[in-house]
Length: 261
Image 1: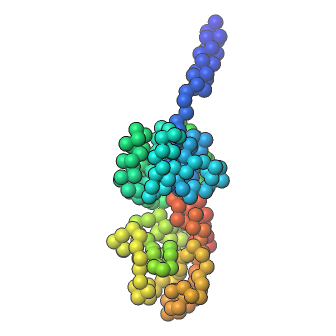
Image 2: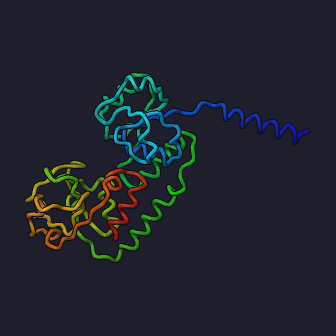
Image 3: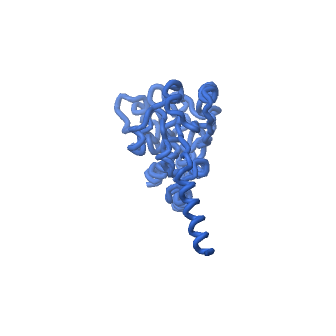
């Protein structure tokens, strides 16, 4: 009798969970779309930010906007329960627009390397899903790479995001932290702004040993004309995949492994 009641109770619990409405999510940043999938919650997405191209399934979802504009009409049609946005990297009025539609929002913080698995676990907890197993391997692997590079001579590095103007990031950024993993130091770690343009004169003065870029350097680019810069003179240029390096997701590990090689 007790066994039958126990089985009946378990069945009723299963049916109740199956009938529970699933949380519908939307994102306002392509890297947050990727984090949602890493959190095991990709099936809950009803709308995504522009440029959400990974994983490939994200390309098939409606685009609700980006960091500069939101399609409010589409957002109302999709009726997400929660919109995830990038904390401190989206204008407050954008978040207010969403909330004025009666839709709840959740800020996702991904400024530092350690924030990435935390963000994924927060999304999973919110959505009631199970994160991918590789989430727990992310930081231990980075620690291994850092330990392996600890005996190397420290080198000065410039992260070049664009050519005209030359943009880079300061030390308060996951890209700069990635250099530190691989025995490199950001020559512009002391910039007052998280990202800013720098001139040729300041680059020559700081003389990086290594240049980190998103594509091979061309002869007509600014830095290519200045062989007095050690990185240019020695052709010590590392090309990393921009989607891996410039997005705070688990794929950042791929870029760090390239840097450490």
